[in-house]
Image 1 (cartoon, rainbow, N blue to C red):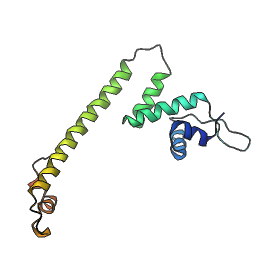
Image 2: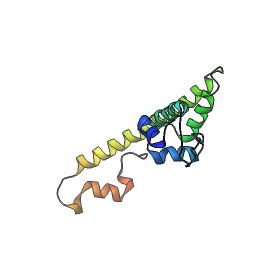
Image 3: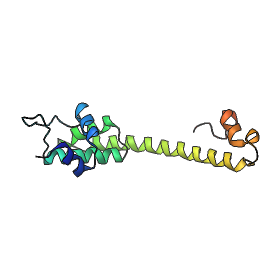
Image 4: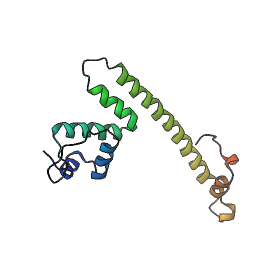
Length: 138
């Protein structure tokens, strides 16, 4: 049985984050010692690694909750897991598109700046008036 500190070290998840995951139900409440210290086993390490990896890939808490529930039923079809991953992929693609537009707008602002005085600075002008942006969505 591991302490919360040891679980944190093994999974590279901070102690407050582990407590938060317990609070919102992603991690089950652990057994406690007589001194009320949490204790974790190998299943907890695996579950927390799953959560951390899913978070690293950008899945939101509800998607992770759904995926964890699915992982507890290994004999069922993985169609639902695929659907969750595809939904997340669409969101990632949307964010990439938005960030690409943002990058282009920032590049344009900097390149159009004469680097003279702030009163004539293109960066300041564009930030003050969204209508001068080349892209609507960023």
